[in-house]
Image (cartoon, rainbow, N blue to C red; front, side, top):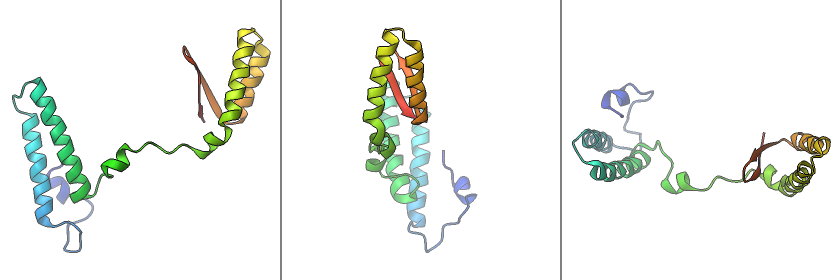
Length: 138
């Protein structure tokens, strides 16, 4: 929980040049106090869950808009960008994984190991799962 003393002990002090006002900071800290009190109350499971979600939304909005310490909701929920290197070698890796699977099915272990070594040279880590191999960049 963010407290007023934690803010005072922070690395910078709120000054007139800051984009937030002292009133906005006080309001944000008041919201933190109220959410904390609500989470420590006797609410039943469903009400506590609803209040917790409300509190998270409120604090995300406050922390993002007033304090500026969180990214916007859109940015936070955005899909991560794909590594361009992964896109570059995806077709090659998929073909190697297919060949490796065929070699393993035929119990051609030296061939499967050679293909695995090729994948390692590409910087690929292969994890064999029940649903098939998954790969990532090392």
